[in-house]
Length: 175
Image (cartoon, rainbow, N blue to C red; front, side, top):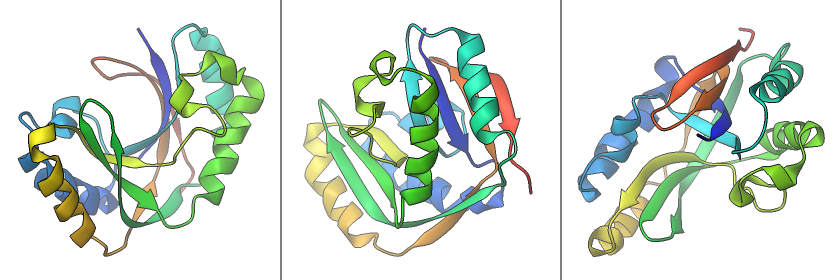
């Protein structure tokens, strides 16, 4: 079962992301983000073969004395694999990249899923992750129209296992 370190928003500032989830779910057969039963988040790392204690220690070291972080999102990007994935793009990702680097300074990046390794990672907040090819063009047209910015305040870092998503350690960020 994989483990991940994620930055999450469990407050009212999540509303714009939740609205995008509802809108984008119309392009999916089954609403992927609602099915997670987990709040809006950014994933820093995914591991298969790392001790939970090591993940907990890194999360505590990197985020233990950190304040909640507000991230402005500028537009919607996408990844194309078997299914189209839509995601909110941070307007400025420098702070997120510093956090990401701090995690990988402690845990060998080679142990991380390849898409979450330094030089491969794209900071993003997923909006929909299972849009079939038949709906992809319409979904991309919708995404291109969603250029208005919004800000989300992320207030905790979770160490999770999935699927299903289970929080195994939480580090609350300072107000």
